[in-house]
Amino acid sequence: MKKKLIAVTLAITLTALAAGPRKLPKPGWNLFSKEQDVQLGREAAAQVEKQYVVVQNKDLTDYINRVGQRLVKRGGLDEYPFYFKVVQDESINAFALPGGPMYVHTGLISAAENEGQLAGVLAHELSHVVLRHGTSQASKAQGLQLIAGLGGALAGGNGGLLGGLAQLGVGLGANSVLLKFSRKAESEADLLGVHTMAKAGYDPIEMAHFFEKIEAEANSGNSRFAEFFSDHPNPGNRVKMVEDEIPYLPKAQYGQNEGDINKMRQIVAGLPKVKKGAGRQGAAAQPQQGGSPQAAVAMPRVDVSSSMTAFQRNGITFGYPSNWQVIDQSQSGATIAPKEGVVASGGGNAIGYGILVNMAQPAAGRVDLTRDTQALIQQISQGNSGMQVASQPQSLTVGGSRALITKLNSTSPFQNTREVDMLLTIDRGSTLQYFVFIAPEPEFARLEPMFQQISRSIQFSR
Ligand code: ZN
Image 1 (cartoon, rainbow, N blue to C red):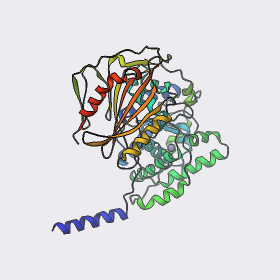
Image 2: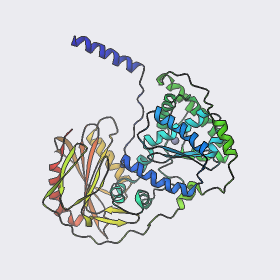
Image 3: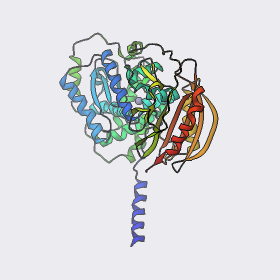
Image 4: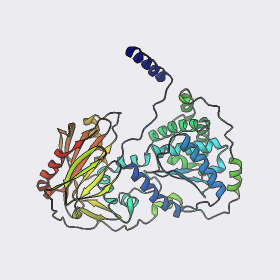
């Protein structure tokens, strides 16, 4: 009986492989937690709503939310708190902030020939959010500065996460890495967007048709259409991509895709004319909150208690000095530091002494420790010109798992000081667990035994 059961199971698996399901893109390497995406999006939304005129028309707002939520719910994208607003701007564009807030220009509603085309742009934007392209790009661009900054900005800087990022030159203005995507990200957003549309009952070909229309208009010199392609470069033949994807899509009879779009176009046409807001171009010039230059703080000496407190989260347990504090905790990680180890830096804080714990997604499905550690280090180096690899990775075993330890140097937030960043990467199968142990160079030798003690205390329960 058992053998037969296996044969049946195999047959089902093979059939499933032959007809799909399609392997859809997954979020890439990212230093932010999902919660930080949401927080960043909220802060950015507050800024956006100062730059744009948000349309207060219930019919229009209800409509855009109805279309958006249909994609979110039926497309199975409801892991983020999405909401949709219409902003008065005649250029043909829409943009989604990390973690969910989405803004649709009135110009886009006017230009869409049917509801399917509007849904196509929304599905594409929703896909950027779910695939976390904005913060993934920011992670790749900023590396180690971000590792330290992310822990720090959440430690209570009054500029928030966005203020902390502004210190690193990451904002919402023109050419923002948060909103201007690579061609690879575009392909992924098209692919996931097409599947999302099909699940929600919209004909996916409308997405391709609308993008082609926007591109044709932009190429003919119509500046109202240019902004969209500046944010979303064409990854190639979109119509062919959709056609190639049809065998993998749920079989469906799509409706006429008309919906209430005609009525919405009339509402948009009847809106009182307003002076054009500064938009995202203006957001670039927005003075940042609490943007004081980096404080010149002399390196303090910190106490290291020999008694340990247990940290337990996400199937990982380790001890840390009981006089240090968990100053930031997210779904995927935490920052632990002594009070004097946190330095106010512009709108946020930086970590001069401390421990960062987090997880990264491997490049492929499973962790390849050497490759993924190199990728992590490379990303870190790219974003931090002052950073050097001080010693090549050494193999060790941590909590029964294969691990590598790599010594990095970078600039400390303390005055005229270099710091050591000891990077510990651990193979947890489908995720790369990593720790960064941070101390000023002159103090590192004194703290190293404690860092080693922490490494030895790491245990995984799953
Ligand atoms: Zn895009």
